[in-house]
Length: 240
Image (cartoon, rainbow, N blue to C red; front, side, top):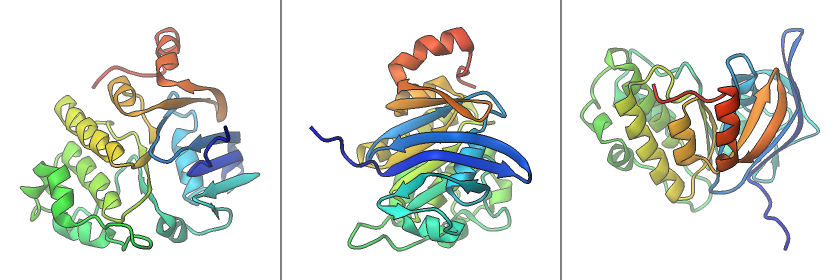
């Protein structure tokens, strides 16, 4: 039986910051409706991988295809329009704007006849944000800002969400709320690439994992198989 064509297919990805080479021939795939974890210690190259895929770092690859489109040479805004939502580690919300205004700036029509995420649907997924719709982003907690960052990416109607350390600096109760929301999105068919060190989030959401060490892909496999590696290497942390 022929394997399905992946939504994201990357082979031989190299990336640099200035003259410093950070990634060395990374290869990974994300299937439709699949959640994939990108695991590694701080400085391993996880964030750089996502930035390279979004065109935010100098890169080259033998193959870098999303939904049949070659990403090589495309600017960041064009990559986003193809259907990739990206939430960076520092969230990048507009702190002077309200929750509703942040969502308005992230709005993008869905491709073709696909259904569109509305503000009401976003607030149903993140009910806590509904109570904060008039609050400026700068007056929100770290966890609330993270929810807003994910919501703003989602209202852009992506097919793939790339989340860089979504539980970083977030209270455990908010991590649980985030897991619940991401699980609902996955059940609806959303695809994910998640850079994360929180084992609870990874085990709850992800099907497979890739382990990066010093800019190289050192291991890949099912999440269940990662558990034994986690215990011996400490690559994933416990809940925060």
